[in-house]
Length: 78
Image 1 (tube, rainbow, N blue to C red):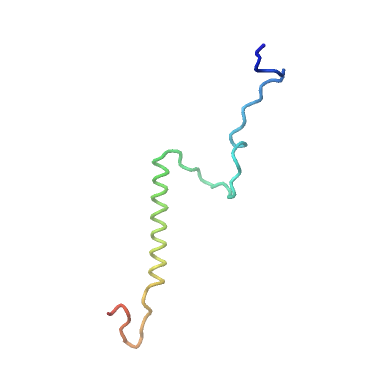
Image 2 (cartoon, one colour):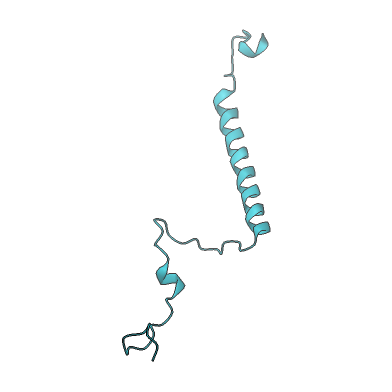
């Protein structure tokens, strides 16, 4: 008998990976995450393009000069 093992209990089963991971504060996504680096990079590129388009649309709406019916030039005319 080995001096390291002092009890006669059978070895414990390996832990299930999904049970050993901590729970995330958000729900799982309905689609699978990319496993390879190329897929993750592609997902980041698509997310960056989407964020840039949303930011550009917001800035266009926020910074456009209002319509002037009295024909006076605005700030953009100078």
